[in-house]
Length: 117
Image (cartoon, rainbow, N blue to C red; front, side, top):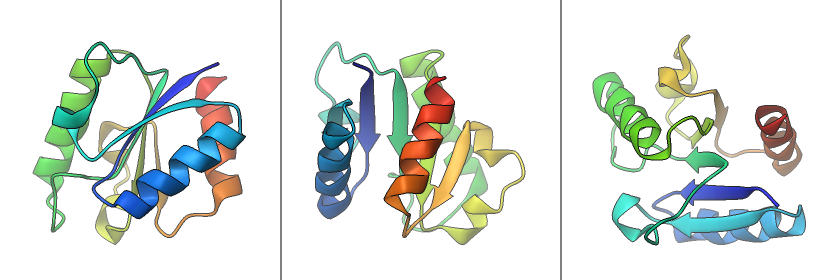
């Protein structure tokens, strides 16, 4: 069963994704930030909001994705964010995909299947 790490500073989103992912057969680890991730957590994919950003700044968003890639190696990164400017970035900020909030659960699950294939 693939392990999916979810990083979001909104507890409602964390609870929703934990339920959705468990129902879809994934092992979900949820955390409001990097410091809250259990030690030795490995992830097959990382779903993240732009957690450290209250307002969108491209350089900070790129740094965030870089830090996730550094910590989780080759695991795909899926950004799920309400920052419209981030969703419009042609390079997806170095992530494998971006989905805008609010999101459709079926679209999210289809993107996960695509990234894990």
